[in-house]
Length: 94
Image (tube, rainbow, N blue to C red; front, top):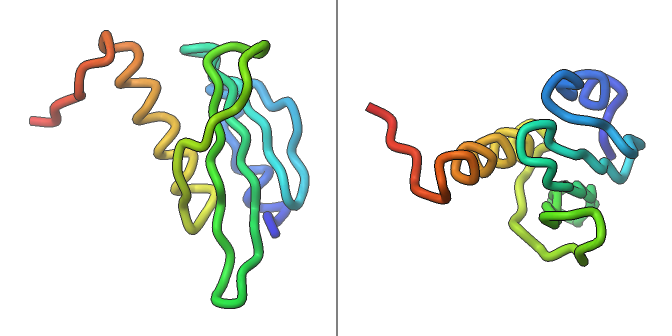
């Protein structure tokens, strides 16, 4: 379950928040306009966030990955945005 602290930590200058509750968060990147849906799934050995993605609001979602925390998922989304904005070329850090 996402905590109130995690939900309040979402960067609203970076994302337009569409839904944000204890189990589901839907965000739209202000940079790429891609839509991301984070679903918290409780498992016997802990929680996992399933990351779903679509390029346009009218598109269906596709699974884009998993992470152990919402914070990790948001970091992943921001890296994907950099990839998209860089002409879909890997971003090199140097």
